[in-house]
Length: 316
Image (cartoon, rainbow, N blue to C red; front, side, top):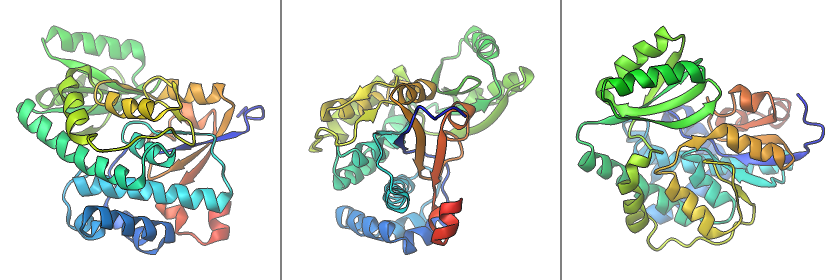
């Protein structure tokens, strides 16, 4: 791995995946940074987030999203103090953009909690009202662009709407479409040598969801104050450098309608001299793909590592 000429560190907040309560409960209770942030979150929410999360159903409930946000920010604090990190940039694909906005200094923690809770409710309401015939996102690996192009052309021939809403690596992407067509897409991807993975619902990151963007701006962003970030932000849509609060606010809104381009985001970090990524949060995807693992040194700050004794955590 050639990182000798790239000595900078960036803080990465991963996109949200399944994060069961049982896997993070001890971290939430024991880690001092987590305890402090959960107390602050409870003051904002006026209820116990720990209790609500422990009873919530589904991987992407409002309470699961809030807990993921708080855990990511607590893990960032832990990693920066544990390893003496001074990140030069912050970034976060998809859901990670919310934690990015907070840690960069563009948004206060309290407003980050408000944004996350409001957006979770807005997202559910939008798709329940505007998409009664459900749509979802299928992720898949081992599918070269040429093979994917042929599969999507066949989907178009069927008269089915679809959109590539996330590019994770050269052969790893996500497509949003009607849930009734997901099994067809799985079969075609397997026939092309691809590996279908998991389904995410509700979806995001499609130009078709302009109504969600408008609704988010009017219902979610109202009363939230964005300031210029202390740590510059790299946008997950195109790798653009963001240095003003308005740019960060726009990035979050654009997340409703623009696909994630993880290779472009990482290329931007490489160009800026970043050779090390501290990934703060549970991540089974964005730090594992070759475009990240082959080109950067990785510090994985997840709940399991944060709960290890100090020497073992440093060795890991």
